[in-house]
Image (cartoon, rainbow, N blue to C red; front, side, top):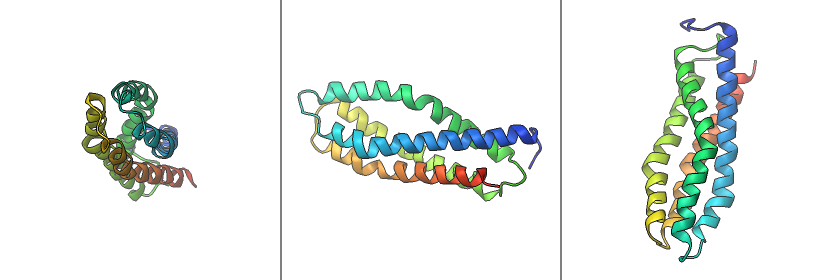
Length: 150
């Protein structure tokens, strides 16, 4: 621990990180079980409009928790409360990297493809390739809870 912040600040970082990870966990499960299957089943004549609107609206919901999660994850790599084992912030960072990497490399291109033209294979592929994000964010939520435990 580098003592860059007070113990209260470091503990607030853990709380903010866990809260953001848990918000993203809830969102990603909703997306995985409800929203993506519905998006995949959108009729061809409406699919591009629905896909574009999905991207626009989703950004409003995920921007803040993703930013908080990312910033607090990095901050916890620099400093953490003394009662948090070093492994937890690093594991959290790995899980965030998996979730964001999967988002950038898999989900964003599939969403872009969906918004351009209907392809009956894109929606089911989006559902399938969303599992790494779902697992990573779920596990990061667990890591956040572990870091909160005394």
